[in-house]
Image (tube, rainbow, N blue to C red; front, side, top):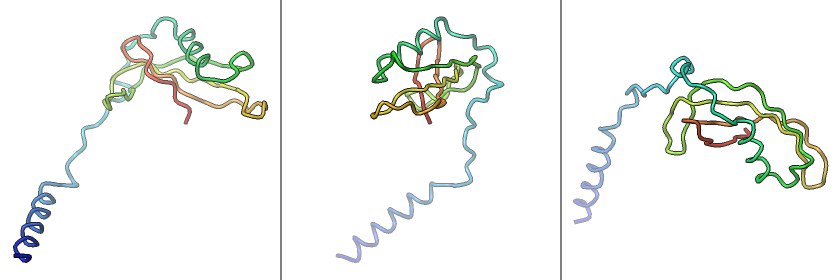
Length: 121
């Protein structure tokens, strides 16, 4: 009886592995060339400042530099790529001890004129 259970489990595992092909081409994501028709959403600077105001501890003493945005592929919360607008944001905020940490880069992502996220890698 144990032999048949082990044999069944082995066949099940091998059949699952037989469907996996590591050489299957992955669908390429969108490139920045595909997204050249995307326009800048309205009020980008205001949306970024509003997000930072609720995210940071001491926003009133924070220095923010917002660079000019560009169209690019953006990963949405659903895990799919879409054409969107990417803005580089530099933030110099205070840490827990009240010292400035220096300017750190971040990226604000917009899709269909709506704010998606602000990432600080």
